[in-house]
Length: 256
Image (cartoon, rainbow, N blue to C red):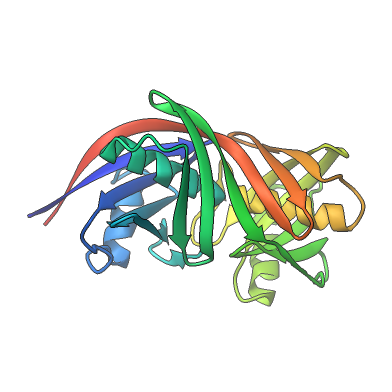
């Protein structure tokens, strides 16, 4: 029997199990094991599993979706990962750089016990030509399709729309957006490899960037996710994401 020591954290309801380790464990976390620990009925329950590999002064993030597939970046997840690292190592730095599949990202995180608030330098946001039925396609390290939501749509209809649009770009997160004002939007997100999520950091950035390019919102946007509010500050073609983190539980995960 193998036992892994994990932490569970959430950011605006976007929840993750995190393994902080100085030994590479990615080979252990195959698709079946990731899906098992992330299962909301038979496992711990999470939108994804993250490995924080510590090597000297370097932190490398591996992000695996709930279905076991690999993802490039998570704006909420990286804050949770840094919080887990600080809790596990008693690191008191407020600013930490993390290597991700989307490149290095700087995280500023202020913790008060097991809760806190942080910002993430999200790097370059690339906006591509919209596909039919969307407002635009954006890449924030990972791919997104932004859609204007319609009140008449049921969630089943949204799921069908998302499946069609995501397929056209080879897989993507899909944001259903409602503009409240130039400073505020509301989104619902179907995330690649996860499904419906309570919040999506990269999706919030993608939505703000696409709608800003269309002249609908400004450069500072509050994004209401079902699980809580995130903030996006656009700086040219780059963005800074802000949002909360909260500790949920320590976990000893036994796998035979």
